[in-house]
Image (tube, rainbow, N blue to C red; front, side, top):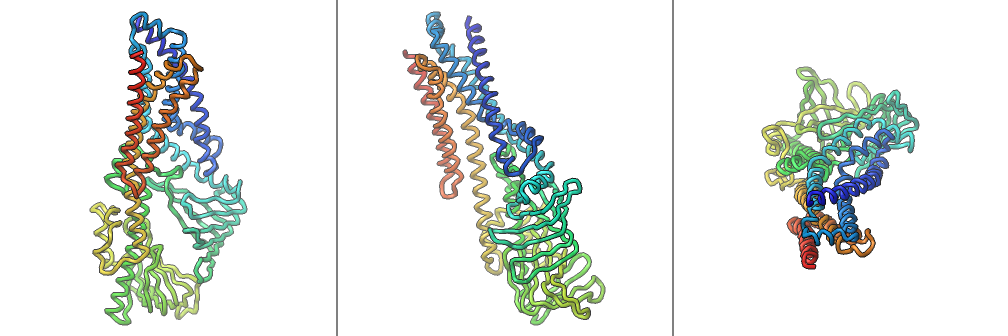
Length: 533
């Protein structure tokens, strides 16, 4: 008889649970895709794909609420129809009657833990791959719709008069580079081709322009060229957030922060800025040791000798050569190819990869013996000198990977004090690493607390359904939502406290578990009262 009773209650629970779950899933799935649709302008086909990919995220919240609704409704009706009294009269204990609801609660808790720790991150990565595969289509659709597109790096804006998707071409193009709310440079072109390249940990967009004119924020004027190109990298389009990582990924990030793209990108910026400041220091030191002597840089095919009145490391990984600048470019083993004179030149350290290269930009140069005066002369592929590279090796592992924690520490090993820009980047890298580690700890604990909390939450719904049997059937569900809301508030508040740099992460984690302990105590008090009466 008990088995028949359990099967009867479980069947009723399952019917209401499935109906509520399907309804809530459809409602919340539509809401979950609004942000990517608004930000990236995805089409109808991508919308359907994203609804499927975001389904595990939705189910993480839907399953507990559907189970809570079903338990409160079914057990409330069970008590209201005096079926519970009949069970008691037959000698069946209340706890025996609750077994089907407890089974649903345990299944939901296990499903929630599996979804949050494993399934949900996997499907988010699938959604990311789907959006990346249609990145070009998204860009062209946004330009056709609004006339511009903001690249996901939050820095570059592309404006175009016309978009030709069939030929992968934009016509009447303006590319604006705005950094820290300041316009760095503007590129105009008759046409441009867009390429999206996907790498393992980041994405890259490459723009090739035709009949190009470029002007910068500084007062060096502008310059024209037949062909131009630039590329920029950015993280995942749907956000490279800790909340979308698997448990194994979070453990790997905790042991090696370079596995997390935002930290890796910032570490490369610190590394490139460090190389620029060391290079400026080395240039000044050799100029003082050999008065009037030149400084030499090599590439695979040529070497460059230059002299300058002054040398200063700037932000954005640059070394500025000013005053009377003389640059001699020569082929390896050959005579001097050309001699340039100018009042300003920049040595830019490439932040890509772990072995930076140098690019020399010579502005308003006069090429001797030819009479040419190009507005900008660029020498690419120069190698960082060994005197600088030897110091940089202490910040790389044997596998040529950067060590973010060492890069974020004060550089007391350097002969001179680090510049303001490098100090700021180091401080930001240290804060980013610390914040990421705190996010990992709080995310792991919050998923665990919410998954386990499903059990007392549903048991409370069962108990309140029995207590409120004399009122409206939805009254028990409304009352049982209050403890669930307390748990969610404790989890959210605990995460905010744990991820706050000025607070202790232990206090935030303790607050999450206090919310769970409150639900357990409330469930114990409720069932103690039911068993007594």
